[in-house]
Length: 239
Image (cartoon, rainbow, N blue to C red; front, side, top):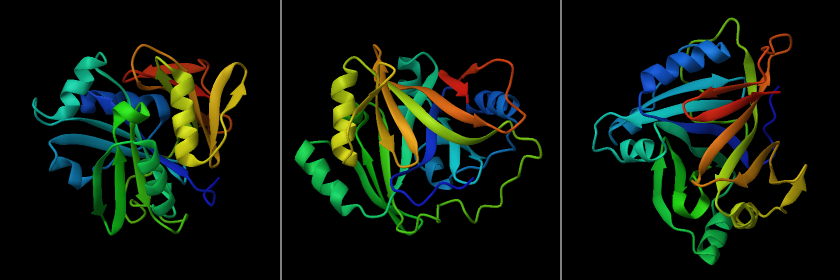
């Protein structure tokens, strides 16, 4: 089911992995995914990556170091080998976000154009994870639409429904996200969360600022016996 149409659109869950090849195989096995594809721009940054299509709209992306000196290598070591690194989020217009970013004092670490579209990346120390805002006005368009990727014949999952971000101060983190995306923080079953287009971002207590969980939609009739699976430092929950 295609959910796009309501910005912001959560397009890619980015997961850091010390060994991308191993994590890629584990992810394909767990989720019935086809072989992924790489973003050639990341190779220039000494980063390995593998991106998997999940249903019609979302993606899971693994990133890791091609060389020991790559910054992602230090991050993976810090979090114990891997974990939730960031989100790629499609927005229709950067302008309102730029205004709020400046007002909030959030640091921009990248402001560039890629594949004909504007990209802003926000500092992980400010947002809890790397937040990438991709300016693509048409909600039915995404960077990888023309990539000829393999298609799984028997996928286990077909959507990303929610992500969970840990922080020593989840209340402050939730409010920061709510301010940036101009929404209201909600409390559901004792957990802070914000509506995020057609999906949800939750905020939980944790010693390290990182993304720790992801809810994925199981294909009808394919829900595994185990409700959760841990891959590359992330807990995935089948819904």
